Image 1 (tube, helix red, strand yellow):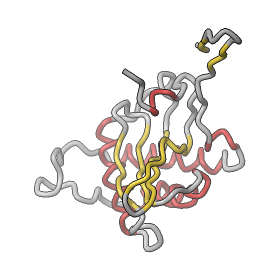
Image 2 (image 1 turned 120 degrees about the vertical axis):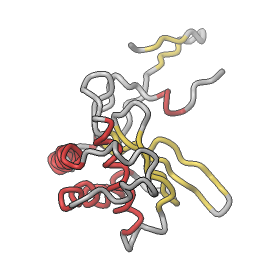
Image 3 (image 1 turned 90 degrees about the vertical axis):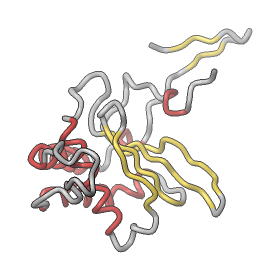
Length: 174
């Protein structure tokens, strides 16, 4: 069985950033899945579960209410590894093309007085939220994005390198 595309990325070298995970053609055009990575996989502590849940609600609400982007948003949700989020948008844009949107979204978390949709009728686990920690993670990521705006590495996945010899033997980096 072949590895799926997201597993072909070298997770030992990923840094926080905004990356294209995949581009798919669907009826009506293309959709792009972005990896919004807040933490270095396997090297930093993951995002607190309750804070991750709150960030999911806060950023999804921001994105789906942004007048310029709301019709482009298909999905915003957490990665199972708790190191970031997936964002699926209509169309095909380079990661730098959504930098301003994401910076505004993460900065907007600081203004939140409550987590939208954190009620039993709206949420499957409404008690599992942590607005204070969500604000902390959002501020940390926004500051990181600002400090690294000119660093192309925050927009390009580190791919696993595979050396192939003339006789077809493959070697893999570690």
